[in-house]
Length: 262
Image 1 (cartoon, rainbow, N blue to C red):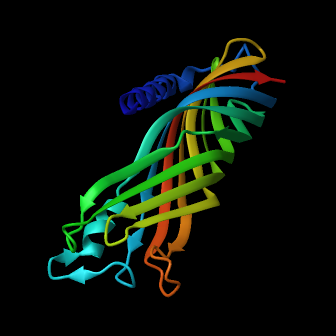
Image 2 (image 1 turned 180 degrees about the horizontal axis):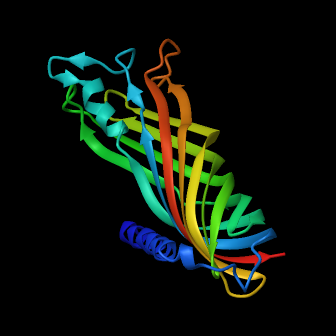
């Protein structure tokens, strides 16, 4: 999926560069006036990556022994990136205002859902208790994302090349299960659902195939700095929190769209 993503981004960049070379010779589009309301449907390949800053502490259940440190052993495992790619759909709704060869507008973009992605470490021997093992699994799901991006574009014949940036809202669910075989064993499940605000930017090219229909190729980058915030009492002793949960999330979406202008 990552190779497909890279090739698609390069293709969009080539389209943009090729048309930039002939901007000086461009005429207003004879196919579309590029003005007014429009709506569209997109299909894309979304690559998502969560970066946990989750960490355990030597506050209760976990310990530090001459043979090793639970904190030093487990934290790097919990902080591994969680990533995956999936096919997603988007609904687009926007409005453009034209001034000569320049286009100003705003676009709303509803995308989702993406598939769940997980990171697992199974049956790892404790450094502090070599006869016991632990298993940890973290799963991140994205229900949807809603972006509203002001944009600016340039008309070159039947092409509209544009960039946009604006806020995005995403709904995330994070699940973490921690089990081990130490003494009577631990089986702990943490679940958190959170709506997060981030930043979304895009670059793309529309092509007018008639006076009211366009096709588009674009690349959308979204960044959420905080999709998770919580604490866990793994041994449920009620005295201390043994683990703190925190994470950010980044997505890259390469899409192809069909758009109707009204």
